[in-house]
Image (cartoon, rainbow, N blue to C red; front, side, top):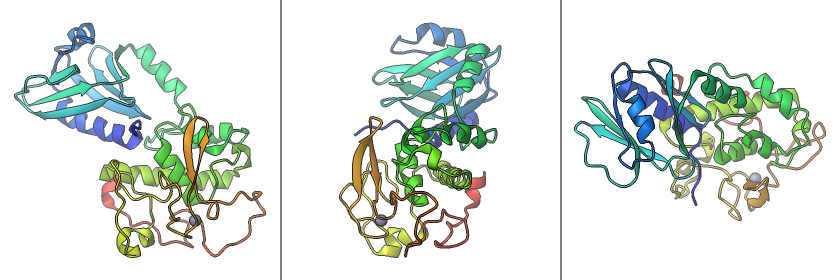
Amino acid sequence: MLTVPEGHTIHRLAAGHRELFAGRPVTASSPQGRFAAGAAALSGAVLRDTEAYGKHLLHHFDDDRTLHVHLGLYGGFTDGPAPAPEPVGQVRLRLTTDLHWLDLRGPTACELFTPGEVAALRGRLGADPLRDDADPAAAYARIGRSTTPLAALLLDQSIVAGAGLVYVTEVLFRAGIPPTRPGRELAAHAWTALWEDLRALMLEGVARGRIDTVHTQHTPEAMRRAPRVDRHGGEVYVYRRAAQPCLVCGTPVRRAGLAGRNSYWCPTCQPDTVPGQRMTSKVSRRPAGSGAGRTPRPTRSSTEA
Ligand SMILES: [Zn+2]
């Protein structure tokens, strides 16, 4: 089953491409031909900087030219040291310098943006937990008055940009909140905790290059269980674990369609109780770092880079 890469992947790409190409003139081509005009317009330009915003990647070149890439389901980059090999498959865009090459295949979007189009993109995207300029209060202004289920709101890129199904599914589990709860039933303090946990998880994803969401006491080592086998790697609580026992309480994980996507949750750990009336249970569901209930996630200095 294919999934669109989540924001941590795009932020890693932006950082990697900056390191490889920024400050250098690049030669651009479109071996496949579908981006021939755009590549010709870019060729010879100097890459000033790169930027990730949600699931969108931007390469800012001199003279206000910006390359916009959205990988979608099928897109991907490969790169390596110069000289570049013969193009293999449908290479939409190839960037090369004296030192390095980068190939892009199968993206949903690969296009040149004007400054106005870049501004329009920024304007339609919500708060990206991985960006310092993110405005979680603006996201809550929409979430807190909506009757839409939280999972759908958090996946709406115009509200929260960059989080995909894995992060949304898992952060709701960690908060003890069912994905079906309407946004307006999420209290402001609960949103703050959810946002901070999402941000911490995604920062760790950038550092590690995979999505891990389990607390220290639920790792395979701590639980003496086999590691998860999944193309995407990473240890998770409920995502794609339908009918398997919850790592915390043993209840079979439930799956249901929600807003056109599969949703996974534990009916015991994420009870559908009325907010404010939830009973204290044996298992604390405070988010990481709130001080009680669960061992805080280890701090890694690399996540602050
Ligand atoms: Zn559970």
